[in-house]
Amino acid sequence: MDKENNTKICVKWYHPSTGFLKHNGDGVFSPSGEGTGIGGVVRNYSDDWITGFLTKAWAITIPWPN
Image 1: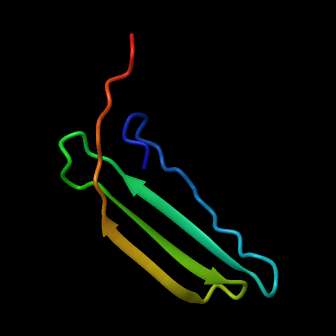
Image 2: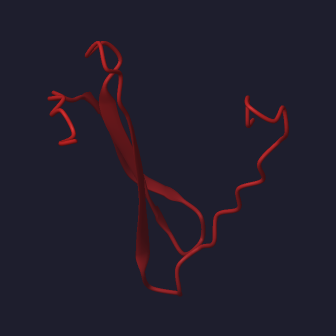
């Protein structure tokens, strides 16, 4: 859901070719450091879940030069 425009965003997953695996990962960042983490999933060409992970991550905020 795009909160700014109050519209739905459609996301489609495409399976890998036969005999291959596909990794999809994502992360989230909070400037306060709370809720910062990464996760991912590995699926095969039949869309079967092979493995996945979820973990908290350390985040360092570096000021952008002016």
